[in-house]
Image 1 (cartoon, rainbow, N blue to C red):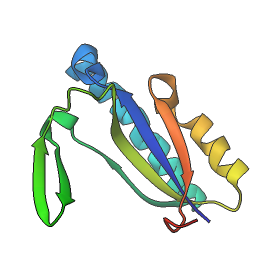
Image 2: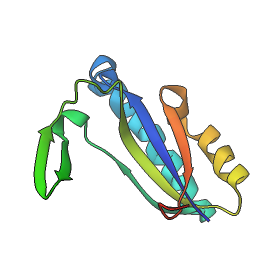
Image 3: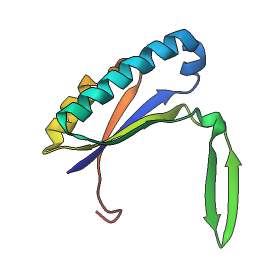
Image 4: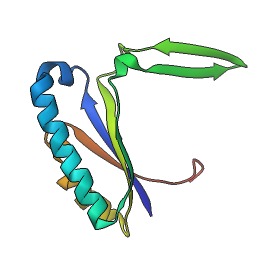
Length: 117
């Protein structure tokens, strides 16, 4: 089964952390990624740019609306993700608990499923 681990990061955390500390935690995440690859459970992963570079798109009644970041109402942003192929939900939860980002963010675990499920 496919599971997504979404790294829910407090807005502003990257700025507060600074570049040097940011590079250090990123290196930890890369080592975690390499471990998931070696275990054969990693389907995809990416770190995402800060929300201030994001754009939200909505289409209502045939009209597009674009909203540039940063998004004032947001307290968290998706800082990255891991898409995993796990045998069980418990395995996905165990991997999430091993993720270094769980020390400074929230790791949300979601099973891939059709939107009607």
